[in-house]
Length: 427
Image (cartoon, rainbow, N blue to C red; front, side):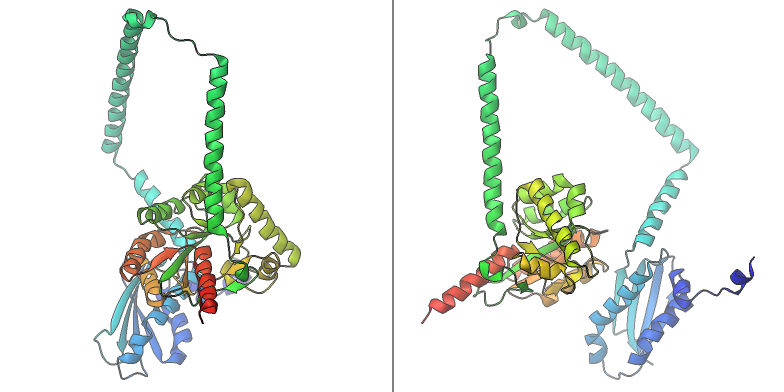
C-alpha cells in the first residue's frame, strides 16, 4: 500500500454513493437542517431507504403538508444525482418533532444508470443459478420438440409432393400474363404508394404549421384560447427503442395527437420508429442533434439544428418549425439561432419530472399544474421511461374527465391566434 493511498479518506458524497446510511443522513441534514428539518434514515431491505423527516420549527400541520411535493422532489433529485447502485427505493415519512404520528408518507423509486445496471446483473446471476435437474429437463424438452418438428416437416413435404403429382387440376392450362400487364400493375402499385405518402405528408405538414405570429418567438403556453379546454402533451429525447412505440399505442388507443421533440442521433438510430410517429399524425419538433445542455457557439448551434432538421426531412419527408432547446436553455446560441431561422422556440408550462420520479408523482405533478393552454413536458426517450408509460394513461383519462381536449403544439398555437383574431373583430 502506498503512502498516499494509506492517507486517503473518502468524502461524504463518496460514502453516500456507496450506500452508507450515516453519510447519506449527514449529507441530507447539511442541506435541510438550516430549514428546520432533521433527517434520520432507518435501514430496511437492500436498496430501500426509510427517511424520517422531523419538522423542528413547525407546530401546525399546514406547513409540512404544503411542503410535501417540494420536499419529495428535493430528496429524490439529490439521491438521483448520487447515481448509486445501492439506492433504489425510498420511503419518506414526515412528522412534527416530538410527535410520532406521521403527517404524510410517500414511496418513490429512484432510477439511475447505476442501479439499472445492477438489476440487470442480478437477473443474469439468477439465471446462472438454475438447478441441474431443471436444465436437463429443458434440454430433453427441446430435443423432443425438435424431433417432432422434423417429423412434421417431412410429413408436410410428402403430402405436398403427393398433391402436386396427383392432382389433375394442376395440369390444366393457366392464362398467360404479359410483361406489359405486370409492368402496368407495378406502376399502379407504385403510384398508389406515392399518393399515400403525399397524403401523409400533406396532413402531417398541416399539423406542423405554426402561425406566423409565433415564428421566431419563445412560447411556454397558449393564452386566451377561448372557452375550450385545450392541452398539449409533448415528449422529448426520442425516438427511443424501448418506450416510444408504447407511448404511441397509448395515444392511438385514446385517439390523441401529441408533439414529439426529436434528437438527431436517435432519429438516425431509429428511423422506422420515426416514420411510425409521423404516419400516426403526430407533430414533430427539433431537439438538436446531440441533446447538448451546455451553451454553444453559433456555428455549433447551426450544425446541431440544421443537421437534425435535414435528417428529419430525409427520414419522414417533413419540415418542422418547432424547436425546443435541451433543458429549456435559452442562453448560448441554440435558442437565438432557432429564432433567427423562424422556429417557434417552445418550452413548457407543466413539468412532469418524469426523468427521475415514479409514476404516481408524475401523475400528481401534471394534474396539479395543468390548466387550459398548458404545454406538458414528458419524455419518451433519453433513458428508462417505464414510469412515463405507467403514468400516461391515468393522466389522459383524468384530464378527459375534467373536460380537456388534447392537441398538438401547432394546433394549440393556432387556437390562440384564432382567438386573438376573433377578439379584434368583435366590436
